Image (cartoon, rainbow, N blue to C red; front, side, top):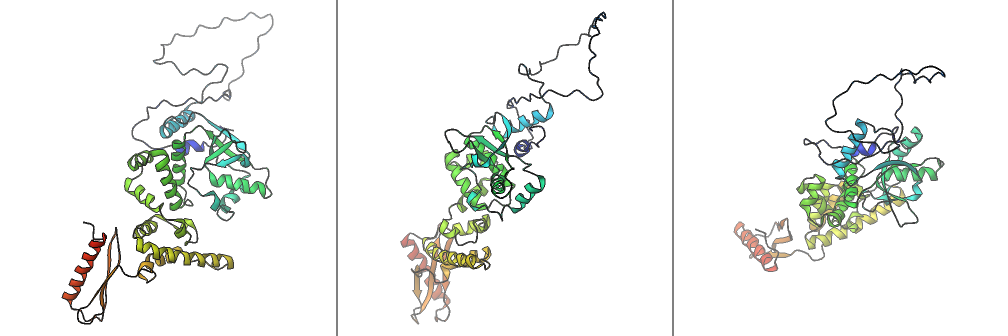
Length: 392
């Protein structure tokens, strides 16, 4: 089977590098005897009574510069370029953690999903996996293997999925829905947790259906579990921009109560999610955003229960970001200043956070330009006294 199936893990792990890899590649033995080339006849059997011809003496050839790698006793010859390329790819990305790769057909009920995987298994559904399900049916089974590793001391499971969560879900669904003959095709690899995380991350980068929020939260856990909270080290290991990774980690801080305002967690993408995470730094703005998020969550639930369209993500984001300035905050303005002549409010401080100070200058107060400048100065001085002044 290993020779007939495309080597998915090798393709997944292969990377273009200018500097050749000098890491010793792991030895993987193919014990299938090499077939005789076409057109070469078998050696004739000896005729009884005939005098055997002496074997010709072969010409002496110079000794090779380095001895070839010996095969294990009793096993056939090693395969050439394909095997060596796979070994090189595994050694280059997994840095030696991958020792052997084997393909198996497994019962998905005996395979669990690794907790370090970015994809949310609970959010997979027939609808989200429909295209993959149809493809498996059309092809008579799963063609691209997943990547799993063996687990110990768990009587309910024998393996866990490192890469291929949707394939696992789809095969499990098909077996429960009129296709019991389908099995879960997987390559078994020996990986530690950090290598497993990098392998899963490589695959998820090519998957559009893995949301930025899922990846962000996966990065946040990995930063603590595998990299000792060292952002630079993690960025170097994953070959990612440190600034981009920092933004992803900020998105991971968005609480579930606010994520529930969206129709799906997949709607929380990097750019708008980063803006939302920044807005939540302001404690006063956070109160208003949480209040609006609860209202949106109720609207989304009502829409789903009645079959109506849910609130689209651009509208959700717009309402959440506008909540602090829409009068939803129960605490009111942080500071207000009244015009000296009319006594009416002329300057208000709506918010003050890491991104800056939001001021509102009111119309119809009779305040002159000099009055407004004085009001702004008073507002800034009041914020300084509260420890919320401008960061210089």
